[in-house]
Length: 414
Ligand SMILES: Cc1cc2nc3c(=O)[nH]c(=O)nc-3n(C[C@H](O)[C@H](O)[C@H](O)COP(=O)(O)OP(=O)(O)OC[C@H]3O[C@@H](n4cnc5c(N)ncnc54)[C@H](O)[C@@H]3O)c2cc1C
Image (cartoon, rainbow, N blue to C red; front, top):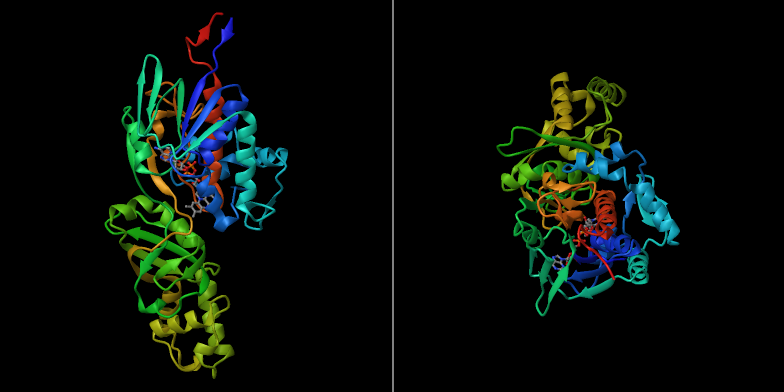
């Protein structure tokens, strides 16, 4: 009596597809990965500015899962199987040294994404994974004999298929063709265009900020805190990317138009800030307000903020009413978002195969047994900081293990 080797076909050689391939092959499946591009792991190679922010150092799966605007609940359960610490152990076992930066982001100590790509490619090869680059899967169908994948030249049969095609609509359409619902893919981490005199000529200035983003016509706003970077087209930086991620769906629906309210002094409670402004007036009555910025606010930005509040000259001339006006400007500068920015620092798509239609314990379709889905092809996405790659590793790991299991009826006698 022999167990037939499960024939696994993987669509997409990104982080999710390659990690799944390794798990499935190491567990005994016969695995072939089809990649439309000329190289595997293309996004991993450019991730983290070429350094590859592989994950985030946070051992609490609940806290980790909170960094996913979509898919948080499902990923929390998935992280119980394979989380950031498991990934770090996996890399350590493979001989890759990682380091954690002060903000929790994890990188290879080489600061070179090639270290990550090389070890994954090498481990896959050693496990017997067959990789076919420049092989785009054009269509996918299922019959009693399993799955048929149509490529430009070939028709391939498989017992199980993993859709790990990332955020591209065409890949998601393969699951749609088998009956899955696709949540419309739209950008989830992006910079924004803001044309406002407050920001004019301040390009390159960064300041801590708390943001509130409200898309035009949306009922709710979304907030985020962190460094905010002024660019020549508008705004960027961690706080903005985070806010854009939470507000992604609303902003897309509004054609990327909305309002951004900036608190330039997030570290100050309102009462203390008011007192600090009054103290500055009494400490420096004869000094120019422009030359005495509030601690933490870059000088050129401060000049714009006081100008907007109508404050000029020396501190002694500032009435309480003017100080209240400045307080309001510091706390609530309202800027119009006119569009998304020209490019993103970490471009991720939200949308994909509907989460409810997938059994996250096996990353297997609830509609099409034998079809597995992982990574960005699913309607899940995270904030910047290593969360998107971790979701790809985790869902790939779970799918890979599940796919190695034989299908019912695959036992043959000999
Ligand atoms: C510039 C940039 C920087 C980033 N930096 C980070 C970071 O530092 N940390 C982090 O956590 N995340 C980062 N991300 C996000 C992260 O890279 C992705 O979320 C992650 O790589 C998604 O992995 P995936 O395997 O699901 O999809 P992908 O990596 O997109 O892989 C999908 C693959 O499928 C292939 N494919 C698609 N359709 C087909 C088809 N029909 N047939 C065959 N092949 C197909 C594609 O060519 C692609 O290679 C970054 C993203 C970008 C763009």
